[in-house]
Image (tube, rainbow, N blue to C red; front, top):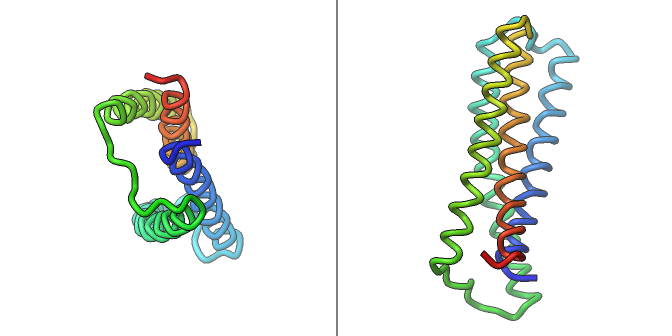
Length: 148
């Protein structure tokens, strides 16, 4: 398995882990009555901003740990240099993830148009964002193995 494939697998699991843990924490606070996510839309903005900050910090820490473990396991001191093939793979994977997120966005707005609660739209945005990230990393793994 190549370095890029390992890194994409770590990205998939870290995205799932961070989003799941954060969702559980937010849901527990909602159940405890600290805030009402069904009507208090100001809290959704705060929750999204905190989630972005927590996600960035957690991903940085996870990437540092990944690089340390990868260097120990493979005895490689340098990360592989990205070439045009890597850039093409990332470009195609980004295209796929944009298609997925845009489709999810349109579905969420259509749901809003037919009566879906607003908090459901926020949850759909997080869900489709996670799905788009998984599609991005999964596409990269696919394209590396396919040999684009």
